[in-house]
Image 1 (tube, rainbow, N blue to C red):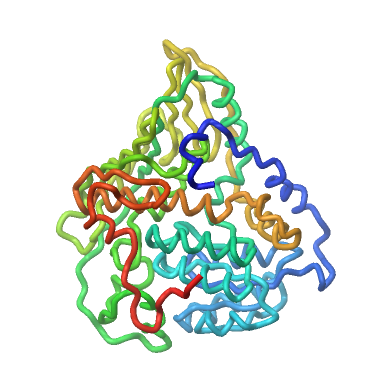
Image 2 (spheres, rainbow, N blue to C red; image 1 turned 120 degrees about the horizontal axis):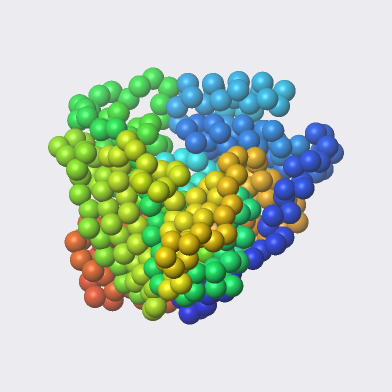
Length: 432
């Protein structure tokens, strides 16, 4: 699949079966025990919302909450009990879940550096996985996650839940039908306000926190609040910056629209403008360009802006530029403009995360049809890959040429070192 993605970008992933979950949400509020999928949720940040969403579905049950911070884990267990009437078990170490027969799937909402390792180990243990975006912390482990899912025939859904909004498929069909002519450029925009990250001193590990397990595959470092809840997003050992954190949604949508795989080359200009002098390691402003055979894909990030751009309805969106017009799309709709600014097709309806993406995961676990997933792990891998390549281009300051077959750079050996990482002893990746 990966080798042919680049030359088949005009074909759409229609996947009509993937939206069948919409009708599933209207099923009876109760289900037979044999119809229930038992889930363990890892992480209590984004994981809190996911646990609540899965607890509300009639055919899934949250049986365990796993977090290295006992205070947060216990609190989420109580919240889920209020929703479902059953208290999940609190678990510290996810590895204790892998051999449990009462756990069918893991929902991975840990920091980024744990996403792929948990996914891979879960697949090897015969568990299905819902893994939050980005699918990986680096390109190599992302590909290993795909290989593990395929070899062990696991259902692995990626957390790019905007794909569940049905108007995107309608827009992609219009693009395929030539509504704006030949698409020559895509722009993905991530425009929002992020606060600064002040420098903090190292300190003792808080009570009830298993910090060694939190570090996991990352290098061993003293405890620091900046390396813990939320702050980890902005440090390279654990996070992927806002390109991988939030920008991955827009990157995924633009890539999905034209079925793009790996690019031929990548370059990036970036800077710390609003964050100058603080503890962020990642940039708050970026312009990434991925080069394809007859298309440029551009990502713009501005994390210092308290405003929306003129002519944009939301803070984040995608623009498709064709030789006969352009299409602007966000989670609440799309607008088409032809030559001279003449309005074309228009759709607007506020999107609500109604559980379709999560029900789709449950349905596919039961049917064992990974092809019906809204966001299969390989889709997640390609979207995360683009983010990783953009970050590597920023960190090296070079235009990097990329081989889609080997998923390596062809003009910079040093940049290839950033496609993977060294894993701390005791947390190495397993052999697939």
